[in-house]
Length: 202
Image (cartoon, rainbow, N blue to C red; front, side, top):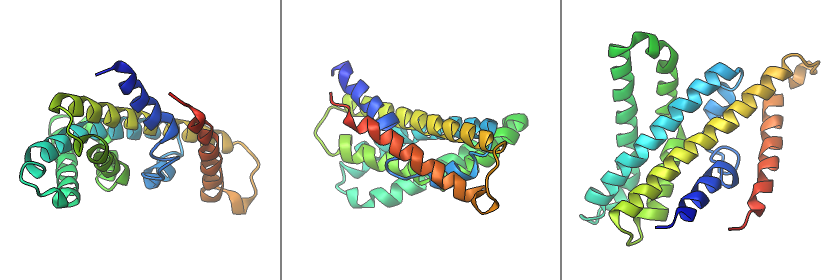
């Protein structure tokens, strides 16, 4: 396995095929939580953790259960159940053992349960790395890298958006354009800007 393959995966999901600005997944938390930087950072960290852990869990489910028994058609159902259950367990664990941390992360972990970007990265992993006849170690590293870097890309875009929206609070914006309308315009401009990365060639 060459390290440039991992670099290509990282650059791809962070910049070129960003889950928010290219695949348009996870737009609900992107618009809803990006009003200020602190909640956006917490949400980004939570999504990164859940995406990474879900990539590991769904890799195991697909590699050792779905594929050997030829029940790949249950992929969507099993991935949704596993991700939702995992997020709920993490939420209950944090609530029990660290109430202070739960006050920060609890609400964001609940939102992640319905975040289609988490499910999207699990499906993308299975399509790209698990259907081919690669070794278990190679497919695991690829899934782990893509899950983590997808979360990093999600966090970067969320922080960019929150910074812009915080600055917009001090601008004289016409009333019909305040809040959601201007947020969607900014998001579309960011998406167009990130399209410039699609010219990268490796």
